[in-house]
Length: 142
Image 1 (cartoon, helix red, strand yellow):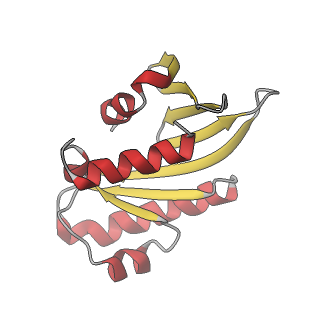
Image 2: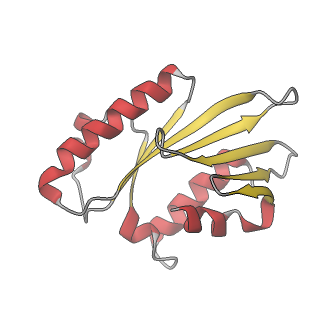
Image 3: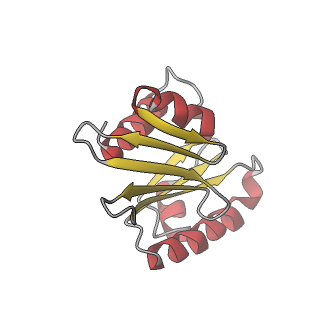
């Protein structure tokens, strides 16, 4: 995911570290994309006083075993609830199984606004890649 997101924002990166990317939007706003354990990816707007406005929490559930997906979605929900308490407003979950019925994932993780499939995002020619990239660009204004 780090490499995919980095490629998606490549032309807008102002600062980069082992656990973050900092990008500037077209409107001049600065966003920090952080890679951490909880949430797995946090997108925060950097305000003029160097404080943060928490925007997007992304949970990545990389296991491929469909029989355990309910547990992983429950873990994502727990992380999203914590992020919600920290002021995040968007909650995405990325899974590494082929398909989950929308009614099932919405029941397991009702906080999740968008669900993406890792295998499809990894294919830069896929609709899922284009959708994830468009949503990310919209979130950070690039």
